[in-house]
Structures are given as structure tokens and as C-alpha cells.
Image (cartoon, rainbow, N blue to C red; front, side, top):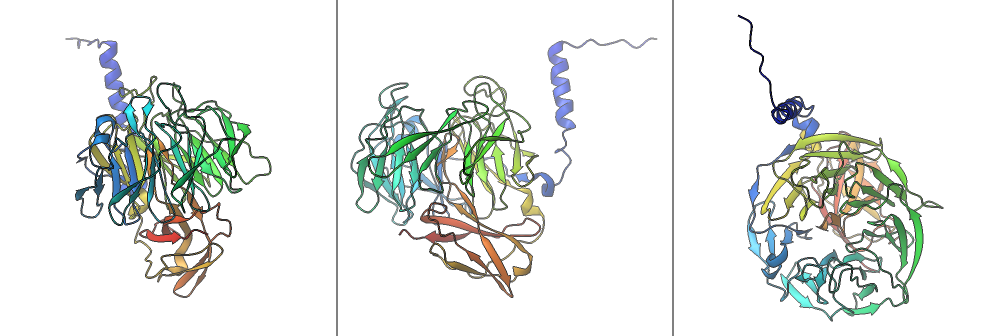
Amino acid sequence: MKPRRVSLSPHIQGVWILGLVLWMSPTRAQSPSQVGRWSSVMNWPMAATHLSLLPDGKVFFFGEFEEGNLPPMRWDPTTQVFSTVPFPGYNVFCAGHSFLSNGKMLVSGGHVASHVGLDDASLFDFDTNTWTRLPDMNGPRWYPTSTTLSNGDAVVTSGEVAGPGDINEIPQRFIAGTNTWRTLTGAQKNFPYYPKMFLAPDGRLFYAGSLRVSLWLDPTGNGAWTTGPQSLFGGRNYGPAVYMDGKVLIIGGSEPPTATVEQIALTADSPAWEYRAPMSLPRRQHNAVLLPDGTVLVIGGTHGPGFDSADAPVYHAEVFNPATNTWTSLASNARYRGYHSTALLLPDGRVLSAGGRLERTAEIFSPPYLFKGPRPVVTEVPTTCLPASPLTITTPDAASIARVSLIALGSVTHTFDMNQRLLTLDFARSEGSITALMPANRNLAPPGYYQLFIVNDAGVPSYGRRLRIPPP
């Protein structure tokens, strides 16, 4: 008897082929030393739409929409215990936030309704677990960006006032010594909310998106904008950008999403964007985290069209190596991390991935470097260090150390980490210690708290040690 041929519908065929592709995925059978490993899913009390690593190693977070009217929370990565932070007195959802030189977090703006902001601003003190209300800003800001300067001040830019497209066009400089504002009346400009702003090596602020055109903001005096180079691809809304050793990398974003990546060297005589290797898939609504080994980890997002296409999730992480201009696909997590998701580096070298729209969960990713042998050990290191000063790190592993990394504490929301930056330090080895040299230029390493990592020749990092760069 002739076997009967079964005809499958196009939908069933597509599901079967997709399942076969996933089953044959190159990361399926690989070990954690090749693709890393994800933890199980943890239930959290609210969506971690705003996520920051405090100087004491705890994670500070607050939620989305009406969750912003609830007290923020801390989470201890070691004990996994949650604790409540006092309520600041207003809805801090959609605020901007960056750390000042003393470790206090400047939180600017907030939420009345979608696209309607607040002119409130506050300081959160991690040490006393208290809030200090500041003078109101020059107007409401919903989705502003806060950027810390080389003297410890901060500049707040953009944010919507009272409706879609109603942008607060005039930046303000927070004067940290007096807790007052200086309005930069010479720098009026209309550009999208949550701009990707970075302190550049020359002391200006560099705007890297989401518009195609780049901009420079001089924060001195009354402020002034100048036009920079255009990116090659175009606008990149809801795509992250990171700062590494004077270079800015913009990754994916746009609608429909793109896989393209561009880099600009801010120290060049004529800075210009150039393409780097693309990701394995287009992504939008994803997050990018700087790792101690000098690579960039990308987590989550969607590869489908639309604002937040949860039916086209990207689950696998991937990591970019700037030295080789290559991407490597890593292990996949369990939950869709799209709009309102966040991610940041923990002191033990793992990466916390949390949140998403109505997603009150979190997962932790252990990168491959945590499965490649023993960690180098830091037995002693100063807790503060001035610019242009030597930094002696006592370690029994001095002979194998290949890298010293300073990474500023993460403070992320809506695909952008306003505080994260990576600085690679030059160093010399000796018996039982290494001596690194802090940069003389404060614009490279603005004052505040950092995580210090030493990395061995197998790419394995130490535990991060807290290091503070004092203000001038």
C-alpha cells in the first residue's frame, strides 16, 4: 500500500520550519562558556521602567504610569530582598536621572499623563534613603535626559511639556554646589525627548540621536548649540547608544527596526559617523550594557514593525567586540523585553534585565566570561582617586591581568542609560600589584562613583570595586 502524503497548511508549515530553525540554532547545544546563561524568571513588585545601580551595590527602581505614584524600591542582588524607598511626593515616571559626584541621584521631571510632564526635581540620597526637593525647573519635562558634567553639575535637556511634540526647548544646568538652576537661554532648540546625550572629551555635550543630525551643546554661560555630522543610516528612535573611551556607538532602533550600527570618535579632528558590523537581527526597544571586558551586550527588543511589536520578539542576547568589529549571538531569555524594559551591569559582572510594558519580572544574565575560569582577585584598592593620579591595585593575579576598566554606575530608562560610560585605564604590572593611571582630563571621567574591574587574559573580570572620583 502506498503511503499517504499529508498536506500541511502554510501556517503549520511556517510553525514547523520555525521550530526546526530554533532547534538547529547554533546556541542550542553550546556551553555557558560560549553563550552565557540566564537565570530563572523572578517576580518583581512593579515594572522596573527606571533602573539604577546605587553606589552601595543595591538596585534602585520605580515603575510605569500610575506605579510612579508608589514608593520606589531597592533590590539587593546578593540577598534578593526588596525594600521600600520613601515616596518623593509626586509621580516620577518618565523622569530623567543621573548621578552627581557625591552619589546622589538627580531626578528631573515626571508624569501627569502621557506627554504631559512635571517641573519637579529632587535628589535621592542612597546613604540616608531620603529625598530632597529642589527648586522647580523652568517648565515641565516628560522624558528629559540628565547628563553629569566634569565639575559635578548636570544638564537637563528636552522633555515634553503639555502634549505630543510640545518640547521644553531650553536646557537647564543644575549647579550642584548651590542646588540651583541656571537656564541656558542661548541654547533654545526643539529636538525629540530622551535625547542620547554624552559628555564629550572637550567638555561639550554631544547629542547622538534619535535624530539623524548630531549636535554639540556648549554648557558654559548661556549655552550654545552647533551642528555636528549626520549619521549614515538616519533617525534611530528607541535604539540605545553607549560611550566607550571617547567613542559613541548607536545600535539599531528606528521604525521599522534596523540591524545597523554606527560609531563616531569624538576625539578625531573631524568626527564622523562610520558603519560598524550589524547585529544578527534588526532591533528596536532593546538595551545595551557595557561589560568589564570592553564589549557591549545587547538584550531584548523587537524585530517587527510598529512601536512595540511583542509578536516579533528578539530573545537571544548578543555581544559586540569593538576590537574585532564582530557580533556573537548568546543565550536566549524567557520574557519579551521591549518598551519600558531596562538592563544594567551588576557589581559581580552579571547583567540584570527587567521590566517591559506591564512586565513585573526580571532575569539575570551571566555572560560567557563567568564560565572561563577563576576570577582575578582584588585584595586592596583605594576607594577614591584623583585625575592624573596613579591607582595601585593589589592583586595576586597581577601577571595575568590584561585590562583595567572603569564603568560608571548605570541609570537607564527607555533604551538609554544616561550615566553609563566605560573608561579603559593604562596600567603597569609589578609583583603582587598593578598600577593604573587615571586620566588627567575630567571630561573623560566625570566625578562620581564607578565600578573598577580588573580583567585577566582569559577575559574573566574581578568583582567590581567601588571607586569615587571627587569633584574639582
